[in-house]
Image (tube, rainbow, N blue to C red; front, side, top):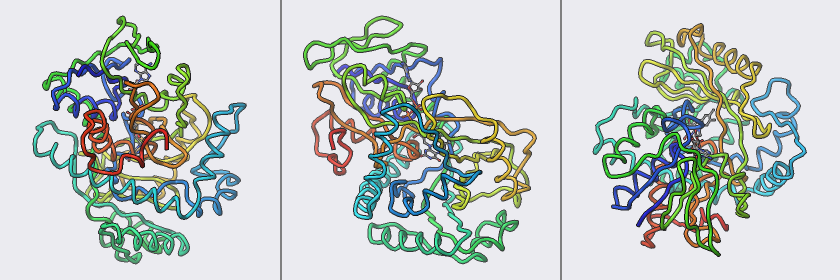
Length: 415
Ligand SMILES: Cc1cc2nc3c(=O)[nH]c(=O)nc-3n(C[C@H](O)[C@H](O)[C@H](O)COP(=O)(O)OP(=O)(O)OC[C@H]3O[C@@H](n4cnc5c(N)ncnc54)[C@H](O)[C@@H]3O)c2cc1C
């Protein structure tokens, strides 16, 4: 089958790779000169297969007023005259029930486990380097209520096959000595030994070349502008390089999926949640964490990527602008420095901003649209790197009308 994959972030690249390996004639359309130049470029680097509980959770409702009022909060909302933003927020609030949060956790865990299995197959099969480590992840808490809530979540996830351990503050520091500076503040932590980390940009670039080797055509530096349709069938993708005809089209345009599809009358609940990252040269063995760390209080993640440390955080609901706010970068830098003062050379840090393509319920949209040959693989929010390989496999299975490895209805765009 001729398949045109629209968008060369980590989702489009993994989709192109999975489809090319199955013998489809794949064309990947990306407007930048290389893949992974946007949200997949400098994200947190955590392959977080088991920390998938959605943001939409009843506990968020209780904390929301404080988070919105606090001057220096990880969450920032700037209301816009934008019906899409209001609709998204309303759907998010509706998803904040215990029953939905638990069901979503179970569904995302299934996708996470599938993704990890496929990642291990890729590591065994492909030879490119992407700073991949199986280093485990430690989420540390600075207040008892949050820690207790995390323990309950870990107990629930244990029933779904997750290996996670609750540690006291001293055990957290023993596991990750770089936490010593804030050791006294740590009430406890949840350690997940099976988690991994890697550089998403290097992964996507390596995998794009592997897809090319397997026969995919990379149409880089090409802007997708629309679709030529006839009735409920898409005939061609209209691009700056001319019309590209295919039998099937897969939209992997990240946060831009929503405006591009709206023009075609396909409504998708994807809204950008802007975030920031810092990348710095790592310091000595004791200064920078080797385990992936999440500081639950500041909502900041830390991952070792080879000789660098990646620090990421902040959730801004501020519209479609990709503008980097210096105050947010300064806040992230200060909080990271207070937590790991000897992590590395802060004077040499590189700051970056990216737009998480988020759905209100925290699940990606994978599957068919009302156009017979138009498919979606988008809306991965804060977990796109972690869930990319499972999502690509699910899309490939749906396209081939094969038996699915996991419950496809859970991710259907029409859910
Ligand atoms: C601060 C931050 C930290 C994060 N940390 C993590 C983490 O630790 N672990 C994790 O799993 N996930 C993390 N994420 C989330 C993850 O980065 C995203 O879910 C993922 O990158 C989304 O990939 P994507 O391919 O859907 O989107 P993108 O990477 O944005 O790809 C979409 C592509 O479509 C292209 N495109 C758009 N419009 C057009 C057009 N008209 N024509 C041609 N091409 C077009 C773009 O150029 C882009 O390359 C983080 C995100 C942020 C912002």
